[in-house]
Image (cartoon, rainbow, N blue to C red; front, side, top):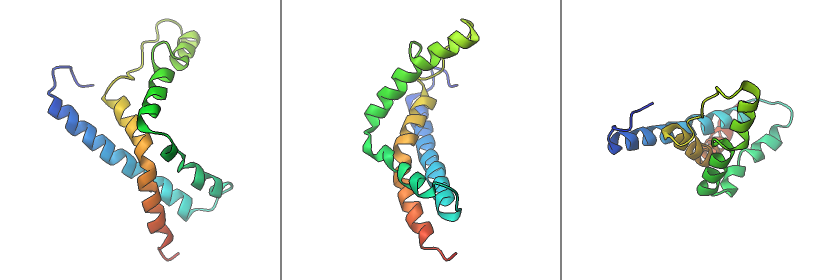
Length: 122
């Protein structure tokens, strides 16, 4: 993890890289999976993958923080199972921001990639 003394420009570039690559890899990969392979409930999954479009990014961020924060249910359960020696998860970090923005933005890439994959010859 980067130290706090790192310039904001470096954090911004890392955030741009992470949010650029994350939705690209996740959206294109899921679009290829749903388009190229036949498996049970493929049609349902194709529609479920678009659902994050219905939730604004700031709401997804609040849900992410409240669920994974130190007093949230995820870390409380982990501390109950693993003991008090379990340290806090790095939720309020560059990685957390990249994860939230990736999960919010991948449906745009997914929809475009799926439309392009459907046009390809089998």
